[in-house]
Image (cartoon, rainbow, N blue to C red; front, side, top):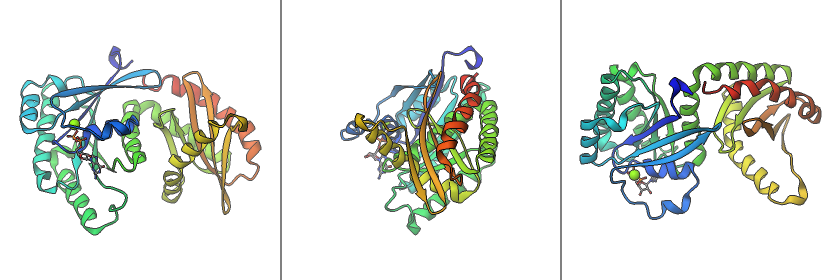
Length: 309
Ligand SMILES: Nc1nc2c(ncn2[C@@H]2O[C@H](COP(=O)(O)OP(=O)(O)O)[C@@H](O)[C@H]2O)c(=O)[nH]1
Ligand SMILES: [Mg+2]
């Protein structure tokens, strides 16, 4: 494990009502618990696991008095590997207050010589209103305010537009944060996947773990990325639904898209079972599955084994 630690610590912070607890529950598919959500009074912890490595998520209540307390005694922020900072895009009157809190947190990290990765969730960008001008302008306003700041520039913070009504948007942001904890192996992974695309006449590939956390992904361009983004969650849902009907013995799902194929299948590696989503021009898709995918499995086995080492 990194620095001999038993696992990773991920802190979810932001103002009260930003949506932190909802994000964690949605990632965990605990939808029924969303119904009677009350403000988090203090700090709650939620376990998670990735590639067999325990991850503790800290959900820090965002009320003013709690923020002041967390900033004062600092201990909740100690040994943070990843900060998921949540900003409610509808709460634009408090963007500045939110920025101030993020500063205070960063100051704590700096005072203890830590430099965790930071992912910002521009949250409540619900699918039905995401395209609206008023929402887009708020997103821009928040980004400008946070990106324009000299201190935050040092942290190459990445922004994701998220909503609990689009769980995939949360998984994308969370996956990005998780894989950023593995900079070295993540690069090897990209290289391996790029080689795979070239050798199989394909244009995009994504490897996801059982919780739909993306561990590696490469795209030939923005269009293939958009396509994969739009299709992957429904493809995985359909695949799992079909697998629930045992008589069918489904091992792969193939969607024909004019001159390309979108393929979903699973690879069984030592660390567990992984989804592979592939967009390919290769017509002999059965051959590709029989030959190239086992080959890929062998090659990424090592990368996955040492993903967080
Ligand atoms: N429209 C919308 N509301 C959300 C979203 N996420 C959370 N909420 C709502 O925001 C409120 C605060 O959520 P909560 O998770 O308790 O925020 P926290 O204080 O940051 O933990 C609740 O009423 C949620 O239903 C979202 O993506 N879209
Ligand atoms: Mg909460």
